[in-house]
Amino acid sequence: MKKILVLNGPNLNLLGKREINIYGEKSLTEIEDYTNTKLKSKQVELDWYQSNHEGELVQKIQEFHNGSHDALIINPAGYSHTSVAIYDAMKICTKPIIEVHLSNIFAREEFRQTLLTARAASKIMSGLGKDAYYLAAISEL
Image (tube, rainbow, N blue to C red):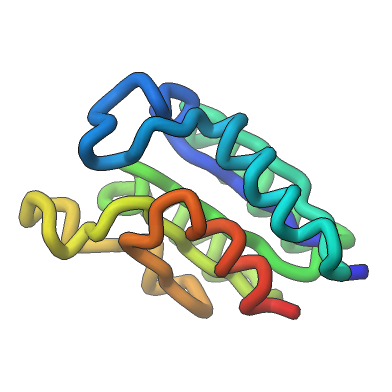
């Protein structure tokens, strides 16, 4: 059984309430339930965590590096464009890291098209909506 840590950054706790035309109608909890249901027959377990605080995400990435999870799926949200601290923590990791974005970042504002954190990721998935986490998880099976 593969164990994957799923980290979600700032404002993703507001999914389903903000910019529905971009992020969809499902809340993060609904996306988590949807993903876990789709993965039920697979040999994978996801541990979900969300924080609006950069330092908490850095701490979780450091714990991942030293922990028992096989891979990390991360949606750094707004921090993906700005966080050297998250990037540095990700760079330390030797296990697979899949960065996901629900929206197609390349069809959005120019500043969103620069992904600092993605430079430390093994894979990047963008524009897949609610299926992003599921597809990221099965890519590691």
